[in-house]
Image (tube, rainbow, N blue to C red; front, side):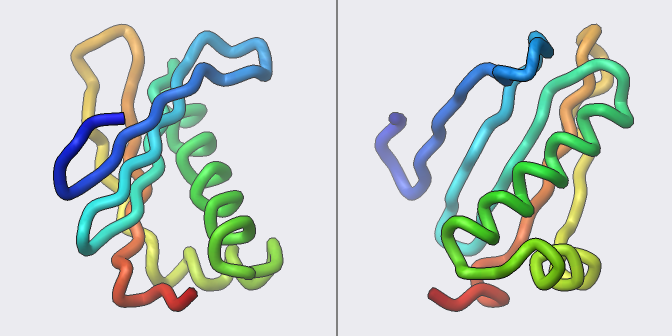
Length: 98
């Protein structure tokens, strides 16, 4: 855990893939990012992990989370230089209610 206005946790993907999933919370956003190869796999993992976060932390069902994400998620391609690509899926906290 890193002290400051956000927290950052990292875990390795347990599905046999050597990539990483990162979770970050700032004052205004929740992030899920995936570092994988190829780019499409990083995009899919970031999306799946964001959906899991919405279901676990905000009470969405899977279909509701998918519909919400279609309108609220912003994506950034954060890394294309390394052999792995990093994709970040972000949702503004102002769109989320506990």
